[in-house]
Image (cartoon, rainbow, N blue to C red; front, top):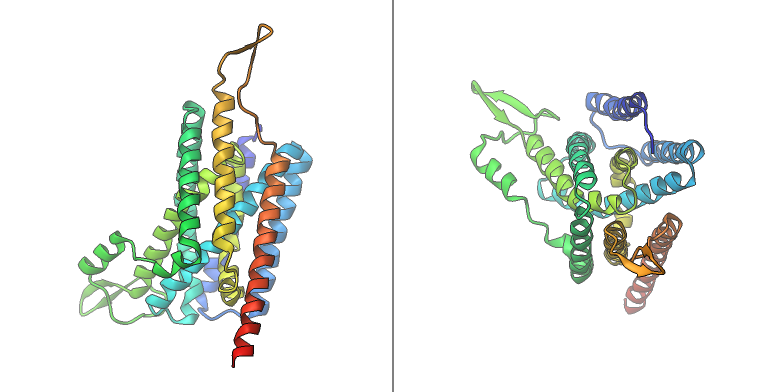
Length: 330
């Protein structure tokens, strides 16, 4: 995919600009957003992602268009799982509802910058060392097995990252929230606010999630431009999803299993791709042939959409069944 430098910069400026405007507007008036507000913004971000994907499809072809949609859907589904952790962090740290969206926005911006660096490193490694596909593939397979073993209970046992605990113990922190400020001067001393601890936790947690999501999307496309834009559009709607479907998340009881299957599928796809790239010279009529098949992007997209659909329907059916049983036992 030949992406001119001007298009790279235009995309980075426009997408980052959208997030910055959101931060500046929301930061001036911390509040708990209404359902109508988050629904409108979420529809706008999803619409932009769809339009962008169709643009890629039209100008670059169906292969790259399919890669973007597959990557975006995967990143979005992984982001939904991340929201479980975000809810736990906000609850444990006692973040007032009016300040939660500001904390999310700042944390997302930090994650965007760090993911951009991660994508650049990953792309460089893949371009220079084809064996990295093996590493990514086996890591995703391991993660899938671990996630399936945890089932729906893994997120309930969230532990604060040790670096956050270390910073909390050694950094002077104010006992007051002081709005959405990250630092404050009290008694002539510069202190961190609880909001800084929250933002640090969210940004670091999302970076840790990138250890799964970045290799996963590289299993769907090797184009850094598509990897970056899929991540940006997924992060754009993360705040809106947090407030819109917070209660619905608890009903998606099979989400972890669905994501586990997706990570397993993409991990196997990465290993097969590595085998395909590192061809062994099997002789067939005097010709060298590849010893591993390539999984087409249409199949990947079908598996992703099918898995997410089945996971959602099965989860909601299980939730309805549990509610009926609970009502009958009363």
